[in-house]
Length: 81
Image 1 (cartoon, rainbow, N blue to C red):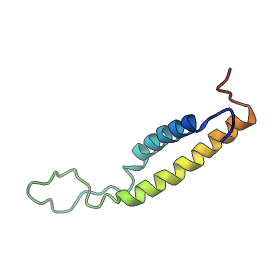
Image 2 (tube, helix red, strand yellow):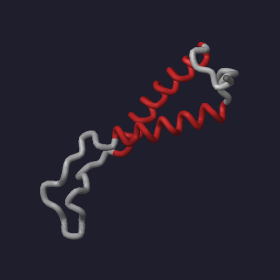
Image 3 (cartoon, rainbow, N blue to C red):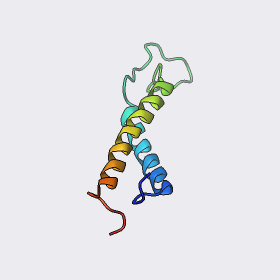
């Protein structure tokens, strides 16, 4: 972590990025079931693959956070000004 961005700021930025990315990733591959069981919502996905989407979200968020951290370290963006 750079002196320009402490660990609380880094964690807050990462969590914000993670939530934005998860909402972008959630719709991937969503398919409705062919036959809806009684009592189930017709719009509910047949196989949501949440574990896979969480892993993808974590990796993409880490990459985005790394770019932001490197940008802050380079001095292009400063939280001190």
